[in-house]
Length: 323
Image (cartoon, rainbow, N blue to C red; front, side):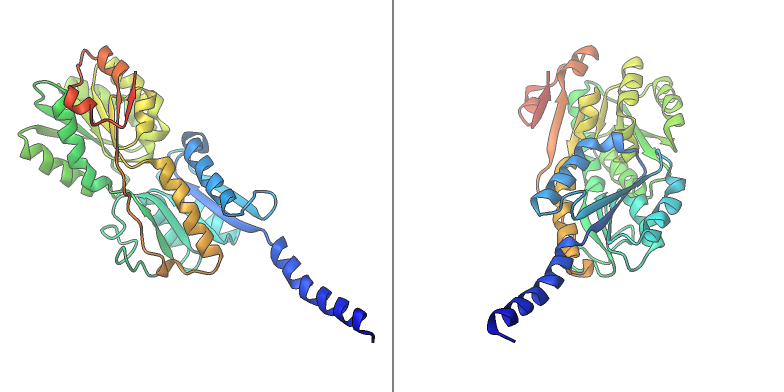
């Protein structure tokens, strides 16, 4: 065998496994309780983050989407479908979703986003050492509950009673409730809790709040509010009820205020977790990250419709003002 032919054979032998590696298509599962249309912007940021890291849908990436139309009870079945598809990693949005995914698999890596307290809910033993197959970006929503109460108290004159709105099926709402109770007590405001379990409960809940004489509604962080943001804004306007949320998407839809981490930025950040896992890093070795910036959004149009004047001290702290 001459040297030229020998080199060609060696080159083709080396190129074959490289070509096979380059041709591999990674499968990422997306699991949520809310429909895709409710979270289009955040999902676009996730896909863009993956593209920047070299993953292109239809080329070396396939994303399998599963959601349950705001029905938490349907999550175990949706999670099992992704497990049966043998996806390489699952991106799970919010605490109930991660719980369902974790129950469905102890081996497929799970990257979470929008989880208020992964330690308190038993998803990970610690933020620095998550262990197991779960890690991701937390939400700080339990700690932020206190700030939501303080902000709405600054904006609504003579506030005496706030309505805390919680999704009773979201386990993280229990901790948010405790934080809200403490915050209300600290500044001398009464709190009454209104429970929701699905979209059908929204109209009765807001009507009950109006009947009870609630001065403002504090919505504990939950994807249902994002999914149903237009409807909630309409109902709040109907009952002349000031509202505050953890997501700016609600303010864009007509809610009065929001304070919390940026959901779109969080989803973009999860792309880095997915990339590292696909490259062989174990979830157990990827510390859970917490938001480094929190944003205040105010809808001045809504404030005007409610007859409220946003104090200058609050406006100056706002990261986003919708005129």
